[in-house]
Length: 537
Image (tube, rainbow, N blue to C red; front, side):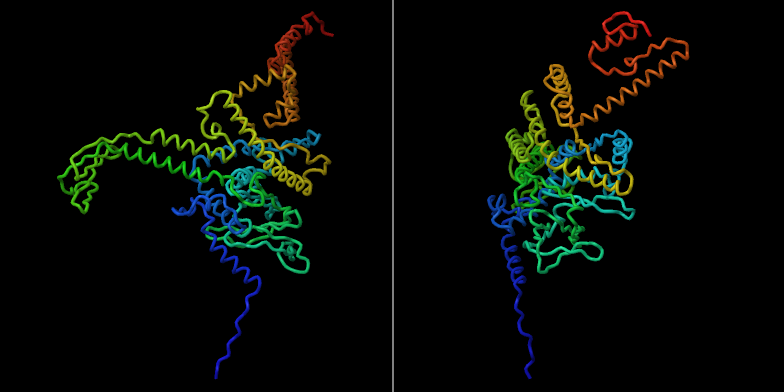
């Protein structure tokens, strides 16, 4: 009896499409990788760099770029310098200054967020085993430029406190398999968590880890990353996610590293430099090379090699010192000259470094060395760097940090810590001071312009990324403290039987104007500001 066999199953449309996508992935993968990830001698530059024929290759390129950029940040001094400089000038001392109009409430908000001395408050423990500033700095100035985009997830711990979880570009969406965009629905389960489903109203578009409804991103699919794989994706509501991305990145392509254009030159420059240094190291440890037709292997040397033609090579080493090499295939001796790396190689390395700086948007004189520029050019270079950091601060740091502050303060209102004040969220995000060539020269120039009426105090304060109202409040408090110290000091002199001669000039000099100082001295001596004798009432 003939056995019954099941009819061959017909592949579904989605299954066939998945197979086509898988085959396309395999066929195009070799054209999308970068030299640092998979170096080949036959791949042309045009197929490795800058190609974007379709979304499949573009997605593979993005992933390859992520790993190559991470390798550069770990091993390239220039990439590491860019990251550290960006942290120093963009987020190292980021702070929020409230301006609600109520000085008492402002002080309470500052202490609640940053603590009494700036190192405490809710921000000090808001990250995962770190402060909010640390998590924010790594996300904005390490992961974002290195991988192209990154983000923070708002999460509540068991005590109901707001915390921030960091995620990088490789955790957002699928990374190892190509996934076509699709329309679907987002619903919530009994616990309020989002999940993806399909029905009659597929109104959400899934695209590379993000769910869009029209022009708005409404949710993010983020994977957990382990040492070996990515798993357990979770869909987060967009209101719980702060997404970081440089607006100057390639339009329509998510997660393109800031180092994309610089990677080729980083690799070439590092290779040139290491080649020159290896040559210099070899030459510095070789005193001479001796050639002779006679000789035999010596068992007492560190290394003794006999070649097929009968020639013998052995080395005599001195610990951490010179090395003499003997080659028994000729009658000559030459001294090794430590002439590497030569000027041509150094110039090649510097040229490569300059192209890296151009690609990163920062001048060579600012990021690496200003020794080849003069006074005016150096100021121009610093001005370029200031402009670039200002762009990064205003498009990435300020709006994202402002959202962290707003959510934290509104959560404090919900807990009853602060009243629902109409101007509770009014304030400014203060960033690190912009770079300058000569702080003393800049200060003298600012004072001159201020006295000449060419600038106002608000302009000068804004140049240092500070808030004018904060300066006024600080000066007001300083004046109050000085006045109190003067009165208490004079009261103590009277108690001891002495004249009350302490003035604010003895406590603190609050002005650089000599006329004010002279007027103050006249008042001490019982004269008016013009020097006329006065009598106490």
